[in-house]
Length: 414
Image 1 (cartoon, rainbow, N blue to C red):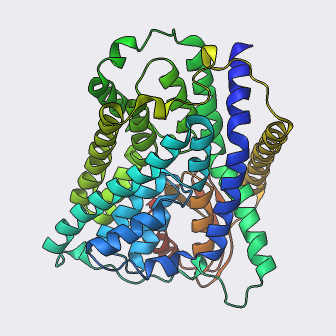
Image 2: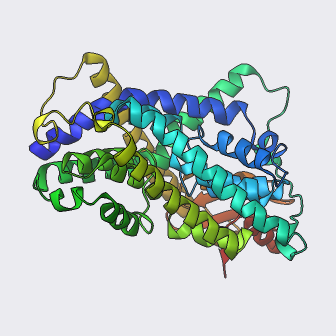
Image 3: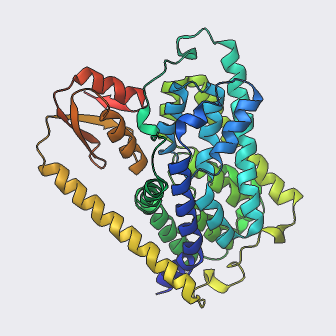
């Protein structure tokens, strides 16, 4: 019962802000095409890097969802420096996670988190830019322009159609992308809050640097989205870890994982991948130490931290409850829709199957479906995300499909 209460309390705190973030996410997706952004990111200097970081901070894309977007930007002319900056800043935060951070961790964390993402992205992008200027003559120094019309909308599209797309993306596709990780994060946080003894992290609490290194070791291979990491960070703080250590989890957990490093290494080179991971880890620890040693600790006290045992019982307002019910309903609908689509795709007779490695969320699925549909002769495309299979119907050239999959940053499996 205590675990359930802890779960519900965190859900009630986060749900209004998550719903607001999902709505803003949909607006960004519908009204700010990726091609428009990439047009301004072709430079190798600090201006393009900072601009890419500023674009990435509010975008609510997870580390797997951001990969196809960044690859498309790269193929459309964005430099490696700007692409790396975008890759670093985007998964660390977003409008949805900033709002949820404010609700659970307070205003100081909500301000420091995007600032830290912006700074680390700018530093990492500049380092990649220095490397890029040294080897512009390399084979991967110039990327061909790829037809990416699926990421643009006709200028004549009506406002109502745009809003419909925004609502569908925000409350359907985004829920499918982050829903599993959000629920997983809440469950882990509730378990930590109730089951971990209050003095478990006391020894590490007196040694923040050691605690941060331990968190990095766990967070880098682990995947957790920017929103799903928030309740985990809160529960760890309530068990004795410092606010700076919690920030390390909030930065390194969403931004760095093996899948991201592998794709970046293949599309932008091993040196860029090494600079990418180094800037995230070093930046997270630097900001974590700054919080612990330079800023007042009471700035980073969560609204829930004063409640005993992780706030096992609080009185939620009717608005919070309604928002929690709506969010839970969206999660259930996303689960049902995913099950129905998988079943439908399994029984549909497609012409050819293509196994694809690297798809991890609904954004990846939508990107593959839209771009494969542009290939001449293709009449229908359906992606089974859990199985990693694209079902392509029509009289088409398989080599063109393979090439398009590679251009999106994914790996076709023979």
